[in-house]
Length: 538
Image (cartoon, rainbow, N blue to C red; front, side):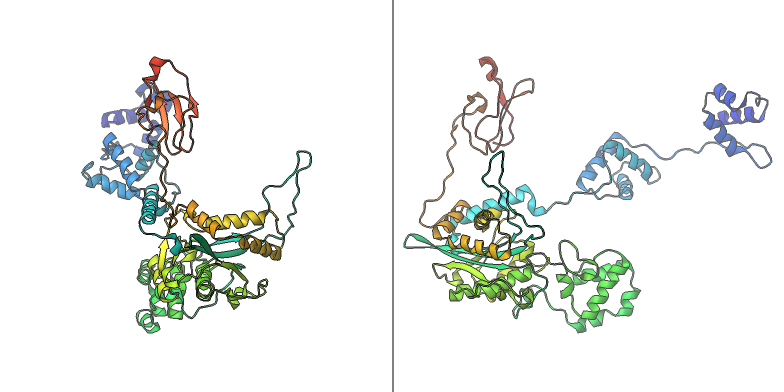
C-alpha cells in the first residue's frame, strides 16, 4: 500500500471511525481484515499513538520464462546443483545484475517444484552399462574374433553358486501333481570354479575341463606369490610414521582428514570426523594401507573395517588359478586325487576340496589365455585393473595373457557349461552335499570335445576349419516401404516396423524380436500408400 492509503487507514482506526470497527474499515477501503490488524500492530506506539511508515520497495525481480528454461537445462546437465549455486549462476549468466535482485532460495524451490523438479534420491547407473558402450565393445569383440582371436587358445573360467537345486519340472496330472521333497533347513550353498577349453586334433575337437567344488569362504590363506603384490605399492611404516602421528590426526578437522585419506587412496566408512579419524589411526597402527584397500565388501566396508566376503572372492579365484588350474595344465592330473567330500575349511587351502575334469589334450601353457569377464569378485580389490591381473597371469602363472569380455555379455564365457550342469542336477533334486557332488560328477563326465566346441560356437566364436558365420539375408530386401507387405510376411528379428496413417494412428506394427506383424489393420488400397514407417530402429 502507498503511504497515503496507509495514513488514511490509520486515521480511520485512531479517529472517529471506531464505531464501524476493523470489519467496516476493511470494507470501506477494500482491503483484507488481516491487513488492517497487521498495520495497526505495526504502527502502534507504546503511548497509544501511531506513526505511519512508507512500504519498503521490493528489490527482487521475478523469474522470467527464459530464466526458468535455462534453470531446467542446467539441472538436467548438472543434477547436483544447489540452490545457492543456481542463484550465483543466474547472476553470472546475466539474468540479474546482483544477488539482491535474484529471488530467494525458497522462491526458487517453489518454482522448481511447480516445474516438476524435486530434490530426491537419484538412480545410480554403471557407466559401463550404457547401451552405446556395450554395443561398441561387443562389436569390437566380434571383430577380434573375425580377425585373429582363436577360441582354441582360450580357457574360459568363471564361478557359479549352487543353492538347493530343486527340479523345475516333473511328471504329474491335474488331479495329482508331482511332489518333490525339499527338506526344511537343508539349503545348500556351494561354489563351483570351472575352466573349459578345446583343441581341434585331426579334425576332431578335444576337450579340457577342470572344476573345483568348494564351500563358501570365511577366511583366506595367503599365497607365497599374491596377486596383490602386482597392484598395491607397499607403503613403508617409516614413511607413514614420518607424515602422521596420533596427536596430529586427532587435531585435524574433517576436511583435513579427508585430504589425508585422499593422499593414501582410501575411502572411509562414513564422512563423519570420528569415522575418518578411526581409519587414519588404524593405518598408523598397522603401518600400511593395504588392509584398508582390501576392506571392501559389496559397496563400502562395514563399521570398523570388517569385511564379510562373498561366496566367491578374489582370494579364492587367485588361489584356484595358482594352486589348482595351473598345476592341472602343467601335469595333466587332478590336484586332489582322493575325491572326498570337503572335510576341512578353506583356511587349510583350496586343495583340501575334491576336483574333477576331463583331459583329452595337453595344452601349451604359454599359448593359452584366460577368458576374463572383469567381475569384481575376480579382481583383488576395487583399485585393480585388468592389466594388473594380466601381469600376474604372465609372470606367476605362465599363461600368455588375459582376454576380457565386454561388460554384461555373459554368453561369451563358460555360462553354457554351468547351464548344462545345473539342468542335469535339477532332474534329481539332491538333498545333501554328497548327492549334489555326485550329480555334478555325473554331468561333467558326459562332457566331450564336441559339446565344448558347440558351446563356443553357440557363443559366437569361429571354430578353426569351419566357414565363418554369415548373417541371414534380409527376406524383404529391395522393398522400401515395409508397410505395403502382406500380413503373413516374415521379417528379420531385429527389425522394427511401425506404420502410421495421416491422422497419426498406429495401423501396423512388427516389434523387435518377432518375425511377423503383431498388429495388422486391413485398409483400402488407396489408403495403404499413405502409411508411413516411423520406426526409429531399422
